[in-house]
Image (cartoon, rainbow, N blue to C red; front, side, top):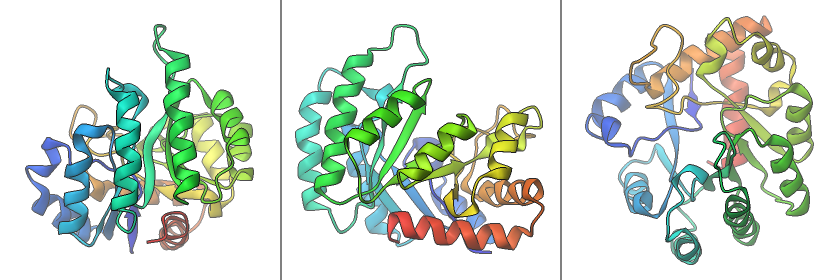
Length: 256
């Protein structure tokens, strides 16, 4: 198999401290390329550096809605500068989005930061990597206003099948991760079993979102192969077919 983990944080200390071993084990499992999204200005240089050191690592840059700080508005200008300077290296604007899970979420500020980044993605002809919690309908509204030729990926999608199909209409792929390995996630498993295979990409969100059987442990990119296996079981097809299709889908959206 040849798999791309379309969303993992190899720059996070828990993974970077053992990076050589992490990459070796991933390669042994058939996971041979990695999209690594930045989450705020503080880690953009680290993500860029990883991409320059390893041909298998493809950096993305963005301001995550859960990592907003007092300087986030100023960081938008810096993001534009980075996208200009490193345009050949950066494969996407992300991780960006809306997270309204907490009752005290600053909805309007998140929308302002998101929409600015969507416009940057349009200006630089980059796809986006979206983080969306409790906000799929609101996110879809923004994507209909600011149309992106490059589309993108809805990371760790957990919405309804109807919402999924609306994203697909707008040119987006949906990230399939460890959540489908839990039998209790019946609705999500049914959704990913029924959606077009052309709309799906594999991801782990390592070191977060551990798979079933690994609860409480560090997650690793190698386990994207297990996600592929479970998805194959749910769809009643061969794991190799899943790997080949999602590889093509990921290459298409990120141009890698």
